[in-house]
Length: 208
Ligand code: TMP
Image (cartoon, rainbow, N blue to C red):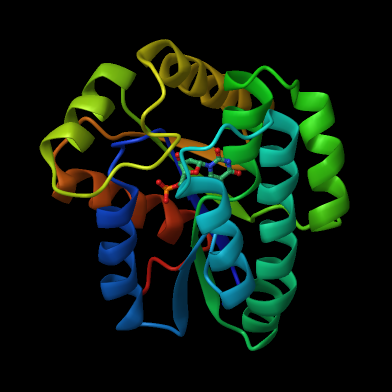
């Protein structure tokens, strides 16, 4: 049952709603926790505020290194011990976010981002990644119309968000076994159902 599942996608792709729904569904059947990046534990939440809460200009490589540092601490302090207890871990964002946002959208290059993250994760890639796909115009319109506060990366221009989506599309082609693309323009119920079906099928959990 110790499956490591990550949920990825651009701004406004509905990750939070899906994750709440997955937690509610799987809780009835097996031990499961949900967590998020950057964050999930004290040190990584502190790094999160350094990266996201300030409007100060941050060097892109500094940003990439902070995401990787946060990822490392969260992995060793929370994800790995929880998997060892035999629980399913559903994580809001992981390495693919750094590859899409820092590697592609910031233009730092996927190779370099893979290198620093390789050091951080020591080969611990997710067992399954659900990529919630929405075109950037729809995603941005969604976050502008809901009440959640925007962060420094949300406020980037549309072409940045287009590059994030292009990055995810490229990653999806690079890792076709691990990454499953979900049409997140559907209703929240349909998106959740699609995600549940993919997880059940991938891990032969159809009986639950
Ligand atoms: P969230 O809005 O999903 O909580 O994520 C916070 C922001 O951080 C979001 O704009 C995506 C960005 N991010 C990166 O740029 N690189 C990363 O590695 C991660 C985990 C998040």
